[in-house]
Image 1 (cartoon, rainbow, N blue to C red):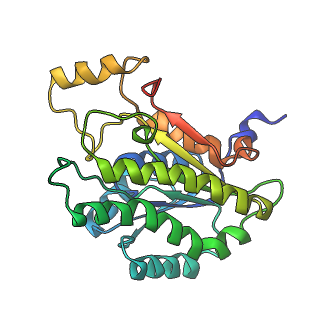
Image 2 (cartoon, rainbow, N blue to C red):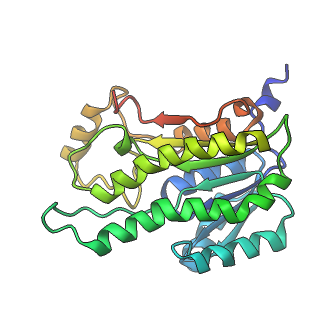
Length: 254
């Protein structure tokens, strides 16, 4: 058995939405370092350009707004013009609203549900021709949805639409896996715990101590933790894994 080849993504083509920052950037960096051609997209062209320079390897930046169907269609057209096949789709772009139950607005609900739940479905749907073109029985194409530990355990923040969207992503992952498995496309979700990013900021030592005390592993997540999970699911090693939600949270959900 070729152990190195088992976890290789060399020569694979990936798209990571929201890849200019946070968890998306961690995953994009890991895939690029492991030999994949990685497309990242975000709305801010300057942020995308800076991320591409930092990520290195075969990384290509695209400016796109995947919060709308028009933006999704435009992004898919850019990918189709460059690549006949797509092997890895990481649905990472997302947002969060923290507001009290009594004051939670319809706009705050809709903005989160649209980007966190509707976008992954319709982007995957429009990229199916490329995903099918890259798939084989031995080496399936891979869809990796980013869920959340917030869909496994209720935390202290009032993030109702976020938790609802991530719980739905976990179940959507399962239903798509059942449908697409016979077409040699795996669909899995990663449920991250606390990874420091623009969305999850530790503001002081007291907050850090509080967060770390909740995690059996005693620390927050690192880029290597997230990249390793994505590489596993996208490599030959993960070819028989589909419909799963992989918690990467140091035991926080226990």
